[in-house]
Length: 160
Ligand code: 4NP
Image 1 (tube, protein in one colour):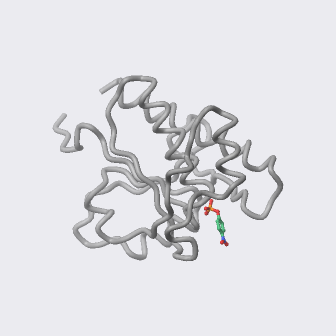
Image 2 (tube, helix red, strand yellow):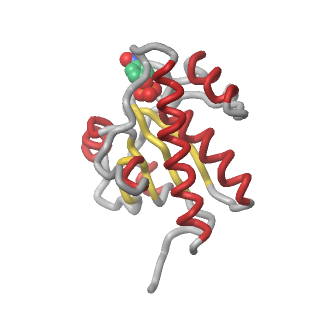
């Protein structure tokens, strides 16, 4: 089958603030692709602009560190229309992120837009819960979700 996806694939993780869920997803995916020895262009963004330029939330950094991944160098940015041309796949954490992304999708978008958990067997349509207003346990659950997404991405990249 003809496939005009880029090789290496370009994947953008999306949430609201780009300081909790999507930087954790980017960190988990960077680690998983590196472990598998597969090249990929990986990035993250938020639909909102409140935290632009900020590093990930301290609780997200701590959870990633606990799992052996350093995300301290990431900086938040806001989703832009050009992201729909620069990436093959834009993966939203929740249904609100998905709706907000659709609202700025340009007519010539090439990226596929989906929920992160759509890639995980048995979890299509589910959202990655927002841990921002909860306790630290929420960040462990976020990591578990986004690392399942990262594994699914690597599995699909290695199967060609
Ligand atoms: P994220 O979490 O979307 O996973 O980065 C949030 C970060 C900040 C806010 C909400 C959610 N906020 O309201 O500032």
